[in-house]
Image (cartoon, rainbow, N blue to C red; front, side, top):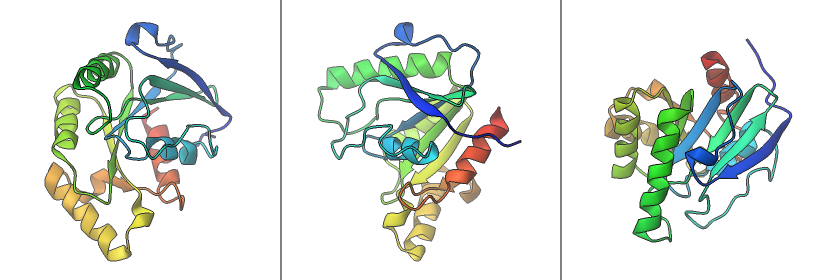
Length: 193
């Protein structure tokens, strides 16, 4: 089964689950990851649309639940990053509450992004454990692989596998810059539909 990931457009930003647009029966793929993991670049690469999602070097830029409508067939949903962000603890907890409500109510599959340049952090392990506890189908994606040499890429995959207690084939190596993993992620998403 193949599917075009175009046309795609930004739909809406919602601060809470109650203000999210109705699903209209479309499958939703939610993206989670630490602040500055590369979710916006991931969206732009996946949808082959430069600048569709606004990228920033400032952690914590995504503060709302952002919906992208794709080919009248599915939605990509960008959630606020967890972990470090230059905002108050109160605001971080508020984001987390909205994110958990959304994740429990809506997505068909979660795309969990992890920065390949660093070992998974405690917050990544907590997020994965939460998703597994709530039986949310999850695909792990190692971002920014183009920033590593071949040997470092292999080491990154092994470390992520060891830290999170999953086999190496549970991860998709990804580079928005080089297009690495784009087709693999698309195929994985289509297989879930």
